[in-house]
Length: 187
Image (cartoon, rainbow, N blue to C red; front, side):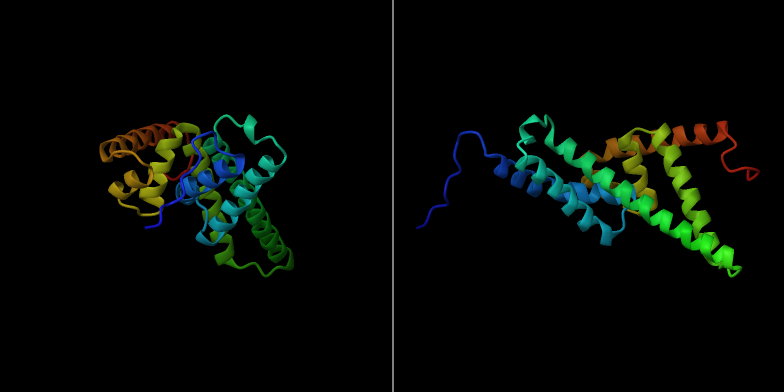
C-alpha cells in the first residue's frame, strides 16, 4: 500500500502558500468578479493576471509583508477588473463618438450606451450606500438571477443572513433614491 507523502509540519514556503491560496480562493474570486459584473470570458484572464501579480510579489521577496493574502488578492482582482471595464467603456464611447461624427449613429448603440451608463451610475450609488456584502447579495440575486439560497452558499453565509442583507439593501436604496432626483423627471 502506498502512502501519500506527508507535508512538512514546519512553516510553508512562499510558493506553497501561494499555491494553497490559488486553490482555496479561485472559486470565491470568480464569484466575486461575477458580482462585480465581469463577463465570463473576462474572469479567467483577470484571475490569471491577479495570481501572476501575487507570484511576482513573491519572487521579489515582498510576499512575507502581505498581512492578509486573501484580501490582497481580492483587491488586485477588483482593480484589474476595474481597469478592464474602463478600457472597454472608453472603447465603446470612442466608437460611438466616431459614429456620431460621421453622421451614421446607430440608435441601438446609443441606447445600449445609455443603459450601460445608467447601470454604472446605479452600481456606483449602490457602492456608496450599501455595505460590500449587501452589494454582493443584491448583484447576485437581482442582476444575475441567482436564487437567494444559492447566493448565500456562494458567499459562505447563512440563508437568513442573506435575506437580512437583501432586505437592508432594499430599504437603503429606496431611501437613497427617494432622497435624490436620481432618475430625472421619471417618478
